[in-house]
Amino acid sequence: MVWSFPIATVRGTVIRIHVTFFLLLAWIGAMHAREGGLAEAVSGMVFVCLVFACVVLHELGHAAAARRYGIATPDITLLPIGGLARLERIPEEPWREIAIALAGPAVNLVICLVLAIVLGGVPSPQEGLMVEDARSDVLARLFWVNAFLLLFNLIPAFPMDGGRVLRAVLAFRMSHRDATRAAANVGQGVAILLGFLGLFGSPILIFIALFVWLGAAGETAEEDLRAATRSLAAEDAMETRFEALPPEADVGAAAEALLRTPQRDFPVVDGTGRILGLLTRDAIIHALRATGPNTPVADAMQEVPRVKRGAPLSEALKTLAAAPAVAVEDGEGRLAGLLTPANVADLIALKG
Ligand SMILES: [Zn+2]
Image 1 (cartoon, protein in one colour):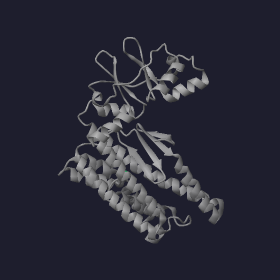
Image 2: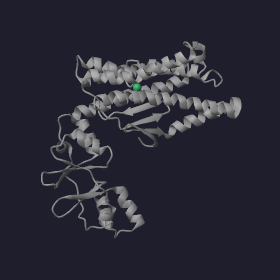
Image 3: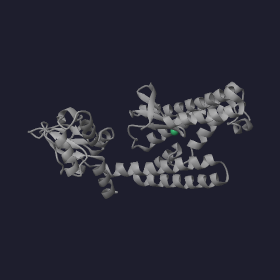
Image 4: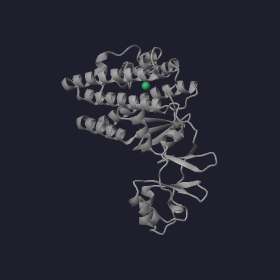
């Protein structure tokens, strides 16, 4: 995710913080400072950090359950609205999805139990209602925040964990795609309800409603992508009509090609048809400014990931997530086509 940077790595999972999280922290600090000065500001910010530590533990709960089924979690991103664990893939077996989805809320339940033991009982709900008041007992407030995270995530609607459980339960009776649609529809219904309540109550509800709506929509889009690419090979989606540059060409010639064609990125291909690298529009512009039009394309091009023609499209797309294009090679290692985000979008539009 853009605008986020890594803070720690736990068993192969990189924990990243989104910059907007610091905006939240600064805002909380400023709000408390206005009421009670520096001491209040510090305790308010410490509390936000404690809440986010609970969110990280929740996401690590998902990651630990996924690891049991051999699924890695490359990263967890902390946003002001909570955490986002990106699993390498979603298990097709409904029981496994249920176990992974419930592992997060289970962590909040454990935290609640531990806090209740430390506090010698369940703190009164009044203390929970004062979550924005820095003076009430930190542990009591932390208890109620975890109780909220537990219940909120169990709402049976996407993108909450409960939505995953609902999808998995529905997937016993219908296709994965229909189950996703149904759970996403429930999610958007919940979003409308939350937004409506927000109009009359707390504006924070409108914010949460927006997050729920976008999350539900994103889940459907991802499932459409999976459905469209299932059983397809890389060559089924590749672009085959494009202009390539020879390695001896210079950046001036590349700039001409950029103006002459609708293409933005150019594969650099040698005399035998093998791809050497990819020259992007940004690299052409940068090279023109930095070293001039006589710069050899070989100095400005970048590495390009390669897949074989028959490779599953889903694998190629994973590579495409981190590169501007993926080269599709034939059996002899010659360039057969290019996969770009644009032709993948066309494929989804045609198949969806
Ligand atoms: Zn969760």
